[in-house]
Amino acid sequence: VFKRMAPPAAKRPRQETALSSSEATQYDRQIRLWGLAAQKQLRSSRIAVIGAGGLSAELCKNIVLAGIGELTLVDHATVTAADLPSNFFLNEEDVGQSRAERTVPGLQLLNPNVVITADTSLHSDKPGTFWGEANFDFVIATDLALHEMAEVNRLCREGGSKFFSAAVDGMVGMYFADLGVHDFMEERRKPGKDGKEPEVETEKCSIEYVSLQSALDQSWTGVRVTKHQSKLFFRYLVASTFNTTHGRGVVGEADMGALKEARAAALTAVGADVTLVPDEMLQAMCRDTCQLGPVCAIVGGILAAEVIKAISHKDRPHDNFLFYDGVATTAQVMVIGK
Image 1 (cartoon, rainbow, N blue to C red):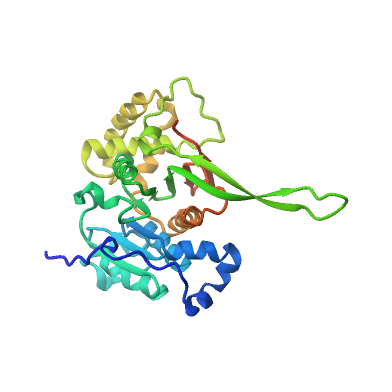
Image 2 (image 1 turned 90 degrees about the vertical axis):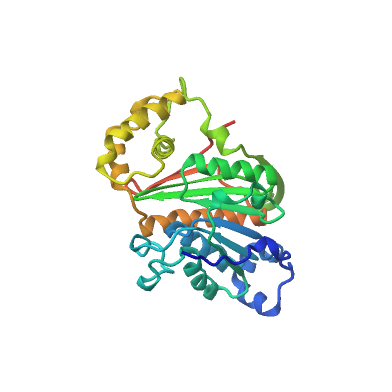
């Protein structure tokens, strides 16, 4: 099947930071929230998003509405019936067509000022330099296995671009951030003197992030996982090992035996206790073989907020991992890796 691929945003010059009068009116509310300087930074940002599933749709909707400069949606898949419940830009007539190309028109309607491009090639076929800062400021990989995310992260580090990744599986989801050395401005309140209102000071801060591979290689030997830390990290380790071994994701109960083997291999490799991923969690993995719209909305919304913070350099970003459990209705932020 012949697929048309539009030229990537990297082939176009960076968008101007200046806002037109119509854009100033369109973005008036958010300019009041985070300021004109932050909006100009959004206006000039170039972002690549890998994947066009339900999670990607939520993420892209939010950052396009926020007013980024350019978005390149990289996805080689075609639309299937399974995509329709979670990607609200698609309908039955799109089945069998390019998922990226059919998602772009709906995104473009949300904000005509954003340059949006569909790239229908396989992300792993791209040369490593494609993901660098010469083309993109941020690369966001959605719905890949952890080892695939780590490879894209490595290429982004080599090319100087910032990296996020995220996934949603049934009732659970996660995201990872690697912003390298990230500077940001943070407001701090100081007690007022002599009964006066508290004073607000703005302080420049800096955080250094680790690569995803460093986080995956962390040893858990002798480390006690507390109730304030999510065990979903280990679930995703198991899923990645399964994917590496079998070349696909989990499809149902028939994979239970292979999942147990993947659990033993994945957790033994990092020195973690296999009880961190009980059989009940493996059974949930067998059930969670699709994306649920509400979970995509939550994870995609949080991720979009973090992307906007990173672009604008306003406010302290979350730590490098977030895990969302839709059953327990909890979201836990963790620092993993050194």
